[in-house]
Length: 195
Image (cartoon, rainbow, N blue to C red):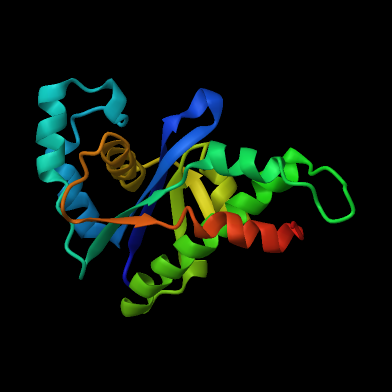
């Protein structure tokens, strides 16, 4: 069976739970390792790297859609959650923030799973067989999608770079950018039975 690595990381102000972008990298093991090789000596967080080194990293973030893909999802988490929290449920009851956040995570991961499944299917792999490399910020997405996850790794490091690049409007050409921020609130309203 083909071994696949998957990494996921968010970019934005984590201290305020203001996640702007979610970077995802998925690919055949040896290709992910090849992409990582020229940048392996750099720290795992792009925010802690100087500008000259960032330029080198961005030049090396080249993904071939046959053997690996990288995509970045616009999240706008804080604004979407706040907007939903300000809507009254039918019957006038207030929403619990925990429930809103869980719903948000579930809606986002459903879209990501669909894209992961497209790639995995082409390599004869089921989404239930993968283990996502992520940190504590992303484990809630993995849990919401009933996906296995583990702490960090090479694919996680690359996903951090991808998310940071999008957050700074410096995304490499081979990274697919996805924006379904208009669709997220619609799906959440339906699930939460909101007006």
